[in-house]
Amino acid sequence: MSKLFTPLNIAVLTVSDTRNEETDKSGQTLVDRLSEAGHQFAGKEIVKDDVYQIRAQVSQWIASDNVQAILITGGTGFAGRDSTPEAVIPLLDKQVTGFGELFRQVSYDDIGSSTIQSRAVGGLANKTVIFCMPGSTNACRTAWDKILLEQLDSRHRPCNFVELLV
Image (tube, rainbow, N blue to C red; front, side):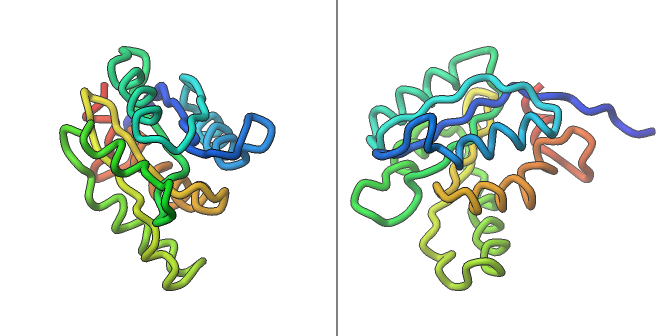
């Protein structure tokens, strides 16, 4: 007996000091991908790469009953202002260590050893799953197509995150 698809309410956060709605291709890629997969778009914001602005927006979504997943693009590198992991990790109840590990592994085919500079992280907070990925459009496609599409699909076996969120 196959399980039915359970759509999630997913919000997208772009962390950038330079992007706006017109130039945010990475965030839009995630919105397009989640919508194409049958999930509900719960909102999109762009914030500066600032620990407190990131935490404020993520905390608002974590506290909301209407958001079950948050996809964050940007701020995961090693540049001076890259602070997404520092902003998000303290908010997590549990880390999904395997997300960053797998993201770097599947990225190796595309970008080689440069993947070690990705500080992609994932975790759970208040029954909300959060995934932080690099700000490039290609990185967002890689994360969605090779990891998140399955892990946010209630039909994926042997396990998926939907079981923990609904």
